[in-house]
Length: 386
Image (cartoon, rainbow, N blue to C red; front, side):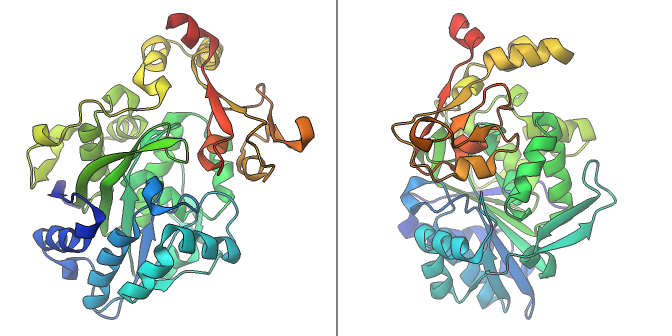
C-alpha cells in the first residue's frame, strides 16, 4: 500500500528546479526507491497541448529534466511522453515536444522521447467501470511510471492533478469517447480512479512553481505563482493535499467524492501527512477557480435534484461554450475533440459553430482551442442569481 505522505518543498522559480527536485526526492528516500538499474521507465508528463512553458499549461521542462536526470543516474532507461489532447500522431508529438521545451529537456537529461503512437489493450478486473482499456504503448511496455503533473484548475473536473494527469495514458482521440459516455463528473471521476489503479505510478510529482488558476486547464487559464513542488507515492494523496492548498471545496471535488464513495483512503486531508511544511502556511486563500465552481451554484442547487429536473437546472446553471467568429482560425481542433459531435465548421466564413442542444458541457473545445476562440457564457439561471 502506497504511503499517504505528501512531501513539499519551496521552489521560487525554475532556475531552482534542479536542486529542489533533488532535495525533494532525497527526502523521500532517493530515486533508488522508485527505479532500479536496467529498468525502462516511462516519464509521463502533462503535455496538454503545444504551449510555451511560461503559459503554465504543461509541466515545465526544467522539472521534467531534473526528475529524468535522477532516474538516469539511478541506472534507468527513461522515455518521456504523453498523449496530448487531439490527434495522436508522430508529427504532432514532435511539435509538442519542441514547443513545450521537452525536446531540449530530454537531450539535457539523457532521456528518450516517445514517438510510438500505437496503443495496447490491458485488463484490469478490479476496475469499477474500466475492466479493459487501451493505453499508449510506452506506458504498457515500461517497467514503471513516474507521473509528473501540473497544479491547474479544470473546467470539467474543477482541478487537475496527479490522478487526472493519467488520463493522458489514453491514446489520442480515444479520450473523446470517455467524455461522450461519461458526461457525469462523478462517473468520470470513477473512470479516472480505475485508470490510476491500473497504471500504479511509482512516483507522483506536481509542478506548482508556476501553477494555473481561473478558466484552466488550457489557454484561457491564468498562470499563478505558487512556488512549490509536491511529491507522493500515492497520486490520490497528492491530489488531496493540492486541493487543500488551492482551497477547492470538497463538495466541488468530484474525484475525492468518488474516492470516498469507494472507501478509498486517503480521500480527506486528515488522512494525509504533509512533510516539509505546515498546511496552514501552504493554503492559498484567493486561488481562483472557474466561475461556475467559485459560485458553488451547481452544488448548492442541484444537490437534492435528480433525473430530468437536475439536467434542466444544470443546463441553466452551467457555462456554455460559444465560438468567437472573429478569433476562430478554422483549425478544426474543437470539432475533432468534441465527444458529442456538437461542433461543425458551418458558421460564418466556415468558422466553428457549436450546437447548444447537443453540447454536453465537457469543455474539451475550450480546453484545446489554441487561440482562445471558445468563450464561456453563463447559463440563464446563473445570470439571474448573480
